[in-house]
Image (cartoon, rainbow over the protein chains, first blue to last red):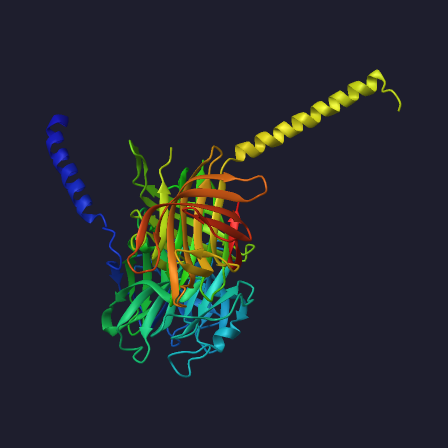
Length: 415
Length: 164
């Protein structure tokens, strides 16, 4: 009897493996993983994700003061009545406190702690502060001041335990402490778009819901990645398309599936929960950096383009048993000279070898320098591509420079 | 003059030994530190009287990156553009691009390094190769020898030189 079952069991196992293989998600940035429209869907606004339970919290616009709780398939778990009744335009899960942060969508600019209570089916509004800078920030929608539409809790950033906030169709983002202190000036979102949602990634990035200036309700829509320190520059983006011509509203990061970095969105017009694959663009799924080099040596001196002018440069950079040393001098015409110490060698490649005629160079080095009595830090990249180096070797500092016009750069083979 | 007691002599000898050990330790430490690095990107000013290939030199710009070993070896690059005027009053530049092959860290804090260079004497196609050169560099200027011509010491006008 047992033997008779082996054949069919093997067949079932092979089929299961086959289905499993086909069902494995492929990491493709911006591809749709799953989408559903929940019960009570109206003009959608917020979404938040609790990784511990897998629950999604979502809201409609100011016509509805409930917070809805569903699973990843939009199966209804609970309906939480905000207490006191409050329209919520933005949500973000705070895993440290085990509660939601919410943005009031009622013109008051309030940022609130919200505690879900699944026994009483309420969402209790707790400590609150007014995001005053967000009230004054420029928007794409006239008359929408004080309607909080983007909110991301930052558990690990600098400083940790802080909040990124924006208004409805905002052209700036504000950074607050959880006690309501503004942590810096408002910073612009990328040119040409208005922001409708914020998700905080685990590293240095934010994800924004972007509507085009001039046609914010019509599209085309996109999800944009920016750096927390340079929110005006889009690092990458993908196109958002949704049912009922809806555009993105709330955003929430989902890292709950091993090996998958994904982003939930809610949308306006018809509340719809969509899970998007962030692939390796998420901080959490970024390719692992190779370990820093242990040994390497580079020298160079010459002339390099520096924007509209030129600069003299000279450097020696070494890393021995992982310890970096050396100096850089950089002297742009008509500009401020840099006098620098090498503080880290972050990458080193050498194509060189020792032949019968002596060491043969070639390769590249990346190193970090601290300059002018530690008042600035810069990233330097050098390449040794030919002997002599003019017109072939490269020198850049913070991306400025390129092929050197005079002089030479040498990557020295390690012994 | 009083005679030292036996105990005092022992103390002096012991103290001397400690000093010697300390000196040796410092010497070993310096020796272990090893290489000397040169980084320079700057402008230089010639005093009057500097002439090379018929050009009366007035200023220069230069860039250098060199590592000098403890045994007289060195590796790196030196590049300079020497600016001046010809006897006819025409502005003319001389460009030297050198490959550093030997060097010394001097006891006065300066460094000296040498090698062979390619010299473009006039940006007019007259390029000399295999020209020996030597640079003695301090943090405030440099003295350049091209072939057998020792140029006057240049002083820094901008930029910087780090010897470390």
